[in-house]
Image (tube, rainbow, N blue to C red; front, side, top):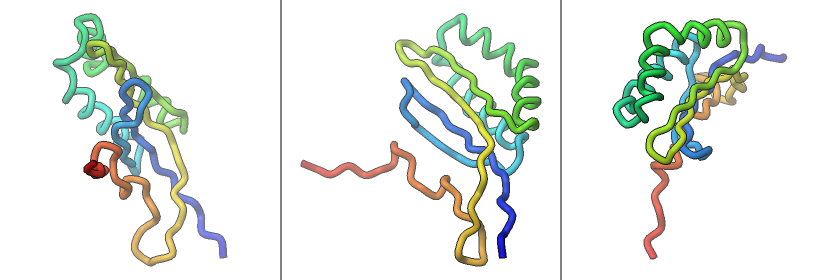
Length: 121
């Protein structure tokens, strides 16, 4: 018996092209909320021009994100913070059913690269 695949949205934050954090959302609206909260958290560190652009996006510009995510398209938002380029993205993905009865496998159960313990030398 083939189970239907469920759609989720993978949300990521990258700094300089490196993945810093990844989460999943079950709806496009949850994905956008995750992006907004994450952007808002780092807003004070943005360059002045990007900070102004981000305030505009937070006020009314995220409607493009809502439309794209609901249409099943990916969406990304990028800013500069000092020398770093920070990017937020969300894209639809399919969740694979798990072998257990509880819930499908989800990548958010994996540790963030920032939380992997380093070996002491």
